[in-house]
Length: 266
Ligand SMILES: [Zn+2]
Image (tube, rainbow, N blue to C red; front, side, top):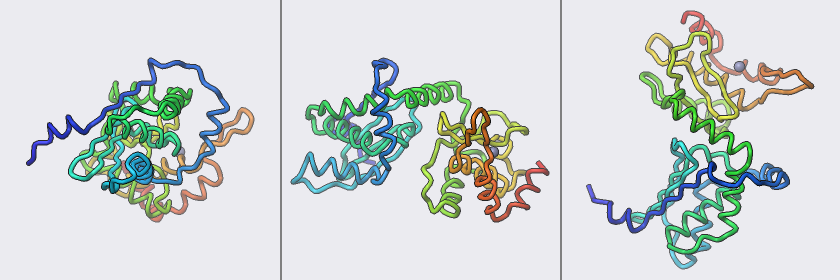
């Protein structure tokens, strides 16, 4: 094993931008502008683009971006052995491309010891100050602080793995992965829930045991993924969670009868 400590010291930059201490002032016009942007680039493509702009004569290194379960909206970058390693809080996974680009500009500026462009700082901070983003970060912090959601890797099943399989099979691999985790308590009444304000799917710990067949876990997770795909409809004061489109989509689950039977047995 090589010792990375020195390299790390020399080449790493750490940005911790908490939403808490910042100004609350914001413009709603900017919010809608950011909402219409679509995520057309992968995070790796965004970093490659920013790298090329900052270092036009340096070949773009291998870029690896991962989203981690940090409690805060933090991000780290390091360049080591020709690989640019970027780690970003998973709470930022849904940020629009423009915000991701601003974050890339901030991180790479720090890495190359250059002044951070004011517009990048502005853009990133403005995003963190958005009411919905702040709320989401607060809730994630609360939840993780109180440990109401535990890691996706359970004793029997890995929710990230099952999510990716279902995503590939039923959603053309296009669904952005929310925060996934097991509940600390083995609830029988609530087998799973999707919380849009946390962008989190939590499954009851009761499903993470050998008596629970995998198909049952798959079905509950699939159901919660459909909540992501088909958001609740609001008609006046009424709120419909399982819309007609939702119910039709749910019928596509291939082992529906078997899964429902397994859940009854639990
Ligand atoms: Zn439901």
